[in-house]
Amino acid sequence: MRKYKDEGRRGLLEVKHAPGKVPSIGGSDLERLKKRLHEPSGFQSYSLQEWLKSELRLSLS
Image (cartoon, rainbow, N blue to C red):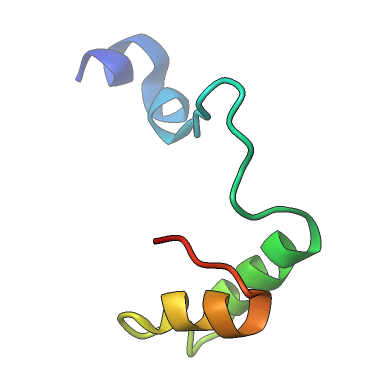
């Protein structure tokens, strides 16, 4: 509650990154993922992990 009181909704929605850590996904791959997430079908359960592995050859585990 303090963060909301001090910074409002914007403070709660801010995405923070660990210093020096490289994101696992970026560039055109990130754009493809965003596009897929906006599709009405989206992802079901664990199909996101399967999509990342099959489409982007990325394993987050």
